[in-house]
Amino acid sequence: MLAIPVFRSRVAPVLDWCSKIIIMPEVGVAAAAAREIDVMQVNTFGLMRTLREQGTKTLICGALSPEMLNYGESIGLKIIHGIAGEIEEVLQAYRQGRLDQPRYWLPGCSGQRPHKGRGRYLGKGRHGIASTGERTGTESLSRHLASYQINQADKGYSMRKIAVTSEGPGMDDLVDTRFGRAAGFVVVDLETQETSYIDNGQTQVMAQGAGIRAAELMAGAGVNCVLSGFVGPKAFQALSAAKIRVVQDLEDGITVRQAVERFKKGSVRFADGPNRGAGR
Image (cartoon, rainbow, N blue to C red; front, side, top):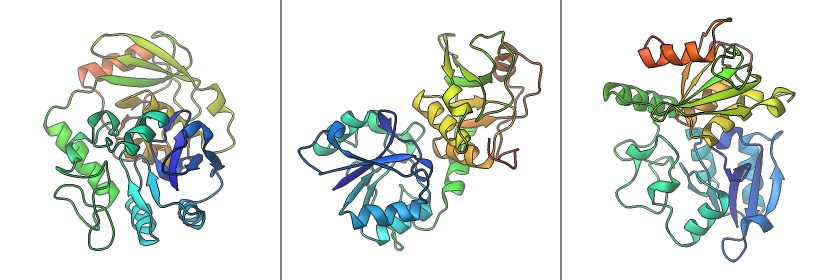
């Protein structure tokens, strides 16, 4: 059996915070016919155990913490991680042995591909944790992400697409200082100057998990950086795992346009941790 965490019609960007997962035979069945499991109330360790108990052998996912990777492999799961894309396309690529193509890589992971491998299954280190290039074994996900971000900054890494939490759909609307419960997100392509709007209304009314779901929306939109006021720890972790940088501490009363101009001028700072004790 094969399992894939799902967000809308795509591979969920962060396994640890996904809300549903589909299970199907490894061959011969389309994703649309797969069995769906709601895992919002189940911790990831419990999810891993459930998958094994139901006969799952392979898990295809986006980012996941090293603890989850280590545990999953220790109970016999083959984990292909760092994968992004539409579920049907990813499933077809897996069955055809094509998951090593860059189009299926989670954004921000291009520098961590194996020279030879099977999709994103990178092999086991001594303790069962996947190794990436020269990085092996017990290196934590947070250290890995920090290293990646520093390296990209040193190279003058230019972000193409940013999102600003907003009270409305336009550039002259005010910034919404909440991340998870923002009214929406104005997405700006810095190369083409095109803008689009992502409504966050459904996430706003969630009793819990709003920040995580908002992070999934950002990953699904291909955003490289989020500008907001307050970002909680779970949302920050989900954004970081999806390789999305965070600019926070935007104050009340400024417009989306002003926030974007600050970003273009380099007068903002990337956050290295959340600034909100309660998840938002």
